[in-house]
Amino acid sequence: MSSEPRDTNVPGSGAGKAAGPGNTVSGAPAGGSQDPPEGLLEQRNAFVQTFFKKGAELTEELLREEARLRDRMLRLESENAQLRAQVASDDAIRDLLSRIDQLERDKRDLLSRIGNSHGDIERFSRRFAEIEEENARLASLYVASFQLHSTLELSGVVRHLRELLAQLVGAEAYALYVPDADGTLVPVVSEGVPPKDLPHVHSGVGPIGEAFADGHSQWTEGDPRAGTLEAPAACVPLRAADRSAGVIVILRTFEQKASFVDVDFELFKLLGVHGGAALAAARLFARHGLEIASVDAFRDLP
Amino acid sequence: MTTGTTQYSCLIVEDSPMMRQLLVFALARVKNLRVTEADDGVDGLRKLASTKYDVIITDINMPIMDGLKLVKRVRTDPVHKDTPIMIITTEGSHEDRQRALSLGANAYITKPIQAPQVIAKVKELLKIEL
Image 1 (cartoon, chains in turn orange, purple):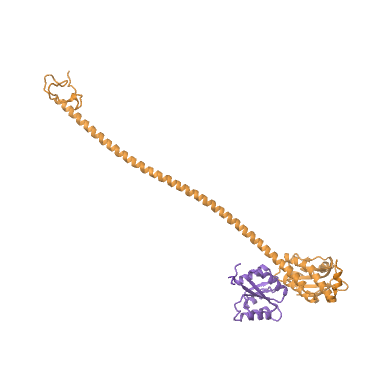
Image 2 (image 1 turned 180 degrees about the vertical axis):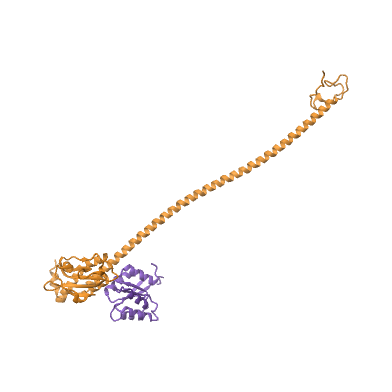
């Protein structure tokens, strides 16, 4: 069985050239014409068509691939840009968060300082009020002392004692007791209570007599507005030369004076010492005038 | 020379030298306040005749002319009718307070006084920042 010879030559190759004079085509029928066989031509044409078709397809495929790659590259570039923006944005957010943290710390620090400042202000205000109160107390004591010793007249001392009791202590009803010749305490000055209601008192008897005898002030722990003769709001012995020269009896205080406070106790002490001295000096002055302190008395001083 | 600082003046009408001295001490704490003292209502009116004060402080119980009469006189005086008046007295009842305020007093403080309270009230009447 015979078969048609295959022309495996590619166009353009020397083997594939159209047969010229003296050339033969391998496989050609011996003694035939120079034209290739019809079948071979068809095969060649088919091959060429297929070749070009494949080439065209390949080219188209390459073009599509290129387009795909271009598209892919654009997408990647876009993603890249987005990622870069994202990173930049994340950094900015991180910076902002960091800044917020710092601001929060600053805020806490400032609030803490403000809190401390408020504490300082309150402390200073309290201290200022305490100092003002102390100043007022000292001023009261100074004024009381100053006024008590500003006169040697008995009436003047008694007037100042009255003022001190009413204006500084807030006594509404009070009496001044002094001992008579036999040592009985008798009321010589009173305010807010009729003199006939004031009894004579023996030394050491009752709160008035006890204050005179032992030389210590007494005062109620209760409401000084509710004091009575039997239980006065306060009894203050007036002392001079280590002995009692009299007793101030505060029977009750004004309505607005609901309790004794620190300055009152200081005033009681002052009354006891300075009031007693002022009273004794006034009584001596009333008896002897200025003769009591002669030049000789100063010469005998150590 | 002008310092630009407001100067204030205060008249204290009080018969008790002890209370006057105490008030003078207390008011020494108020800056730029000049204090004048009067023994009673008549003495107070005498001083008001020659000087206009920024604030008047008066007791009620005084000889010759009491504080309430003084308040009445001041309130009818065209020169002093708007001057703030503070009463300082031992009379602590509600009626006494109402009476004084109805006559034209601007403030009412009872004795024994608390210096910080007096200072605060005077500053308030003078509209000085506390």
